[in-house]
Length: 396
Image (cartoon, rainbow, N blue to C red):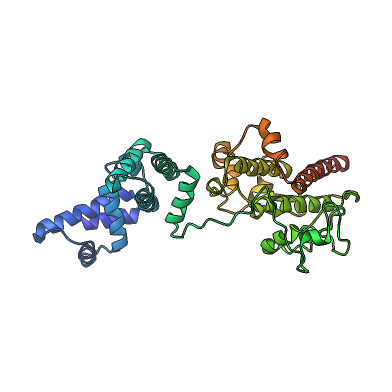
């Protein structure tokens, strides 16, 4: 039996479940022959190794899980060739979700076991997708616990990856912070809205110099956190004219977008983009934990603002090959763009009726944010109009 198993291993002709069943058939045969009762996994490893078939105890545990837990509920997926890594992923999700069920829901392990088995059977098939199972489990826990799906999603991700769930401090929306200038004084003590301190130098991403803005010197892109802190200090001088070249217009767009996002609690999502596009991109959708931190009005404001920034950076319009590689590999937004999966995007960010934009965003923005938003939209128009006049393809 073991010689036959070795031969099939070498030929690569066995699925993971076929191999698991063969190993456990050998286990049963050895137990019956020895008459010493059920063997531990460690004893089985030693016995198989002494018979010329080497296998690790970790793999034995994964095989046991596949046979005892998964085979009765997802036979089609396993027989279609589900591999070891998918089995391990399902086991990880089950353990993490079981922990959350104990934390948020009632009924204990048996109740969760029934939910898990039911969902596995529902999605069993040759085209198995572990992400679909995870999403369904998140929905079940959220519904049972009467808790936001965003909370459960973030909590499950933290549990799976073995890290603590940390709720970041949120910058209030309707009362924007008054950042201290680099000399330690309050922003309003040295300048009022709409007036520049002319002693400061102008700067944009990568050293670009957008005219019409006062900006602190911007750090390289790998120091974006420091850049975000500096850009919040800038003010618009309405008396200055806009720049008239693409490089400076792009720098202006990034400066406006970065501080507008920072004042509204999503500053970490704005990244500069030099040399092409609109001067900046959004790295991802807002953190789902915001749903638990904000009331409906504040949350609506953040999400509509995100869509305004997405429009001004052409996140859903730009060529995929130009914009997707600039985003982090684990970004939901990147995955939605690369897969052209609108449903994934809309499921990840609350998308309100566009007709609510005036009431939910325009009228509630702080005056500084309103001016920045208007200037950002105007800068977007200038970039596009200048590109048209000069025959420039901005995404090349």
